[in-house]
Amino acid sequence: MESHEKKSDQAASEADRLAEEGSRVDKHIEEAKRDWEGKQGDSSVPGAVPDPDDEEEEPTEEQSEDGEPADSAGQ
Image 1: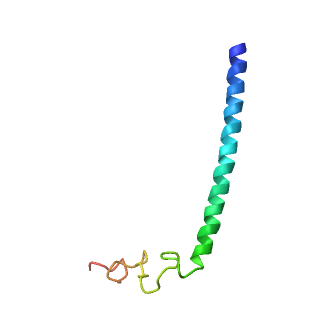
Image 2: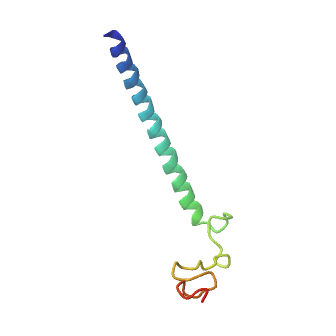
Image 3: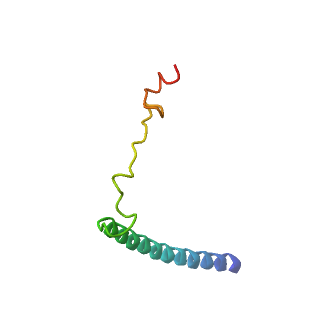
């Protein structure tokens, strides 16, 4: 019976440790998210603000790569 209690205690300790680690990771993610959002508003940060000249229009599902409707492409 003691081995079951010992395993139960170990599992509870591990669960507590993992919960604390999860909370720590969540805080780290939130800090990184706030930092990134702040940088996106700063045009002096390279890569944080997309360059409008670099944005290319992606073809939609209805269009093939040459801009024609997909159902008539290749006809």
